[in-house]
Image (cartoon, helix red, strand yellow):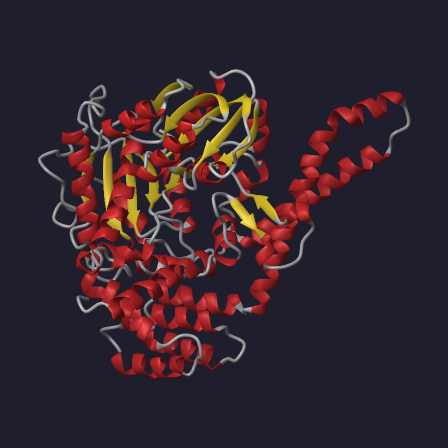
Length: 566
């Protein structure tokens, strides 16, 4: 049950049975679905000579009857209308239509009526309606992402679109895995409950025939939780490779855009970071920053050895050998350049923003309880001119989440200091508390409610931590631990309907409404490596870093202010 191979198998099946020269036509969502599991060179091997977006292909009138058009689209009404117009005056010799999710009967009728020239060879549903970033991590890139933070009455139609996109995506994931889950949700979240109930209705009533797979002894579990139960994880600086690249530079569908941080040669402006296509990245994506530097040095040394042997070309045989190995050599050269560039750029950002200093206090706030010392550390950082506005804001937010009930006076002092900053005002911190304060949360976020967690934190404190920068564990870790031990409380995470779990599930998909982080996907990968007999997959409505999380928060605050119903 690995999401990357499910998505890849679908794309394989779409392309391999259609022989000859092809154009692949995608929409803004399916382009991400394909790009994370298929490289451009692999598309060329399948005789795909052109990749186009469905809305831009409408603008061209040039006939290409020598090409076969392979469409892979989400079954939205916009896409159906675009297709209808394109089939009315076809430009390609053949049309093969694949949709990433369940189609409505009316949509099939529209397409049938539009195909007057009988160019459509097939219409199929291939359920790859999710972006499989890593083997155990998928996302949906839901638009208007901030809306999950607001009550449904503020903007009912946008909330409905958000829920529909998530439910469609979850249906596709389970259809791809050929499973029907039992569903649980976080009791304190209205939107998690709504998504869980709508997904259950789709899988057990509206499309029950589609989901009628061979019964397993124990059904898989789908657990729907809310980002606001752990607002700490997306606010923290990261110190493991994949998470750190996303936090400091940004990753979109396994691609890193370096144009935003400096001038680079054209071939380095966008680099791919994929565990499926890059063995160094696969081996090091969860390693901490210090070890990455050492491992990159080792890779550079190996490359220099290869370069030296290539300079030593004396005979025709040597030359032939070099030409044979040249593609591998170029790939190695590209890989070395990519990772050296990323680590160099991140080191610069860490120095400029004094992130080691900031991060030490962040980790203290997230993991330890010494309030007086932490207050002093946060105050000193707020007084430090070289700390950026966004880092000050995150420190105050973390302090507020941790001590909102314990020290209102000190919190007001920090608010006053923050309000001197030009960019951010304390109102955003107060909005975060309203959204994700202690009264709103289900889990034991700081490990200070539950006796077991208090004991665990004390033991960890006595033992000391290996690395002060990576001591934080997301709330997700506790949830997975509870599931493994069969201790996830029904009262906190109720079941939908009368479908209960008999025994311990072997497959668990945890979906976070409001987005996942790479720290959490690392947590899932490490948990799966423990071989507890349960395999976890993590999904979310987007992939967050602190910038994206704060942007969602600001947008939600803006909408809330302009609405009277919040």
